[in-house]
Length: 206
Image 1: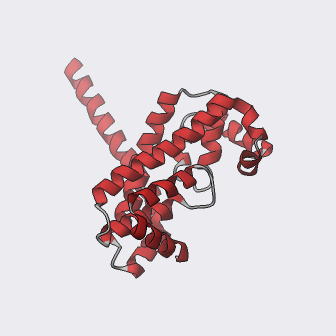
Image 2: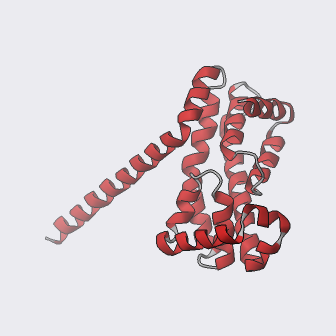
């Protein structure tokens, strides 16, 4: 948790701008975990250095901007981007082929679930852009839906745990599995609502 404390100190001293820059670094695929960055943003809000709702809006914008930048780079330059030295470190030819195969198998669902798989986001978004299999608007819609689950989860976790370090650390360790539970509950809710709507429609036709 040393990294979390370092980020909290930097963010507390420099405010929203530092959080936004850190998210741009995360989006570029550099070794700065997005979840810890979001938690740190929530922590400084909990400590009174920022407004938590403004922090949520800022981090949502920063996350989506970083994701879109990666996607559009891939979309504009295509497979040529794999020759860039920086990109080659993140997305090797063999990894690129594997991600393409996963797209063939799972389709656009890969874009949604990539947000919840640390270390996969940059490679998946770059590949989605280079292969031209999805439009920018569809990418933005899917990414926004996923970010609306993960971003508030981490930001508000940091906010509520700002003054209880042990509780915060415990839930950060549980965070990834808790996110999957949350996704499952949301999907179940959507399925139940869809089933009820379909049942009402059938009853109306009868």
